Image (cartoon, rainbow, N blue to C red; front, side, top):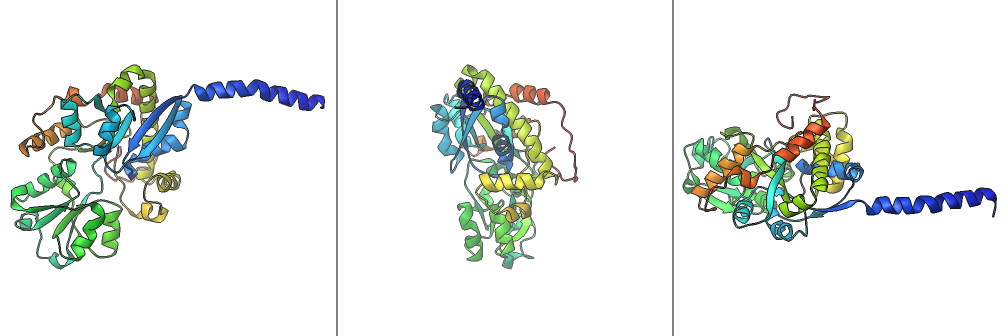
Length: 346
């Protein structure tokens, strides 16, 4: 063997243990997520190596709904849950679930829209005209409840004045086409596709009627036992999230990085068509990770009236705001390089 070859082999032999030690030093973090565009900050941080640079080995697991992940979070099978704010979360924490909200995943504007049957366009003009008619929701016990209640209230109505039909999002377009429902609250990409096929008419923006804004729609929840025992890793995760979310927000506003972010969303979300991602509305997030606590309290008050929860929990029991605030301060101020004037994600 030549002296040069021996030198190369020796170098590799010396480098390999160091590389293995570096890999072993990464702290594992398992994240359960309901895929959406507003999860972009997480995907960007994962794809671009931000978590790894912070000493984390982040593994993502897609789950159909946040409610399915509560047991996984409670048992520390996942340490972080990214999903809708629900009565299940509130009731779980009231019952001792070791969980809290640590950062904002999605808030309004979210792209939620109420589609109307095309044959009713011109007849049903305001929220008041929905009296006695049917409105489809994806489910109850989420902030969809709050948006629907606020919209109906703008016309002097309550849930008792309409027929609420629970229909999974993929079935709403067909229900509109078959006249099984009069209106449906949907969000991209399914609303985008339904409108493109003229199965529903864009009729109302429920978020225009929110009295408390912004509305926290989905949040990053930590297993609090894990956060306490692995505080360094938990804080590092928040730093990665905030960094990734700032890039998502830049793309949300049509920044120069939008093509790159579209590719990342097409890779990680359930929408794999970059052209559809470009056409559809993206959900807003917060480049500082700030948690709109007023809306969390307003949501609880509604669900208490609806008898979905037994008590309104104090915000300190539901939310940990200081850690994400510290992460944002560590990264410094955020200013959009390209501001298209669109509300949200700023």
